[in-house]
Length: 198
Image 1 (tube, rainbow, N blue to C red):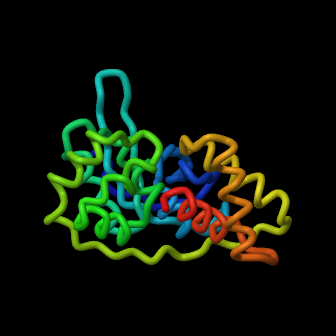
Image 2: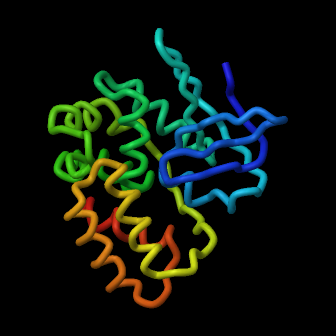
Image 3: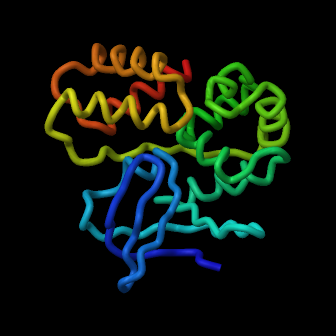
């Protein structure tokens, strides 16, 4: 089992990163919270890894911190929550906010995350309500130069995370109004995700 990777970032997106480790490129699926903490392509990176093995696939899920990995592993322990849905949940709501939502049994908030239905949200609340004490403060990624390309990239990332294109567009517009100026990709994405999960 692969539990840790250290290497160079070959390619990254809000959903995955390819890490070159001694000439071998590992495709690692990541939550948006980990994406925020990655440096630019070419930088070195260390990721904690959860290896998920199925009959037809071997998938790697990477995390910037032990807290993120522990939360992911708690989520996949809930019946009906697979690793891709767990990453989607971590991408749709920050860890501290997720812990608050679980403590308050805020099913409505969880169902705003793409892929999380009412029954799944209720099951997650029931099983994890008293087990989470996690706080996370994502670090911003380097700035992206053009405001239009940043907005387009954020909309694309939101659509890839499962949000409807129109909802993604409105969330980016609201995020841009709140942030103004030349905000970087990670700041706009973070604010747009908050808009979508309010």
